[in-house]
Image 1: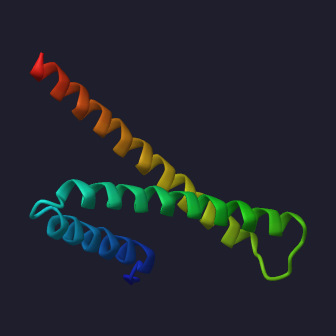
Image 2: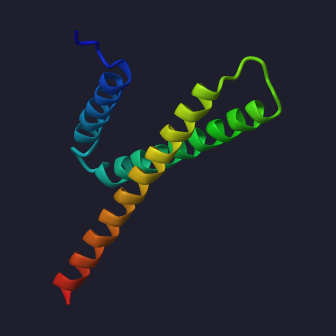
Image 3: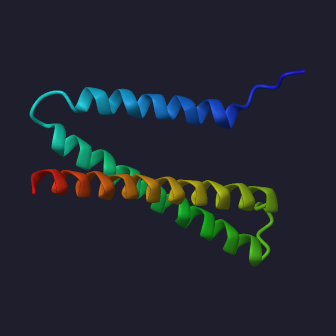
Length: 105
């Protein structure tokens, strides 16, 4: 029996929509601003996910009745995956910058 994986498909749809937005935003003279805006919104989303996970973990610790351990663990993992993704993007940007600087020397 094959069950649809809703979180995976929704994440794939989100990535595809961000890619299409980035492709549309890069055309024309506003490409640099669009990239900076996309990067800032991604960093803000990572920060929001971490704040949400921490507040939910705190609510679970104090015994809030509407917070389950499963929700806390899933939100913590989402925040961790987002942070790891952000770090990888940063590493690739730094690597690309270093490559460009080596070319221009």
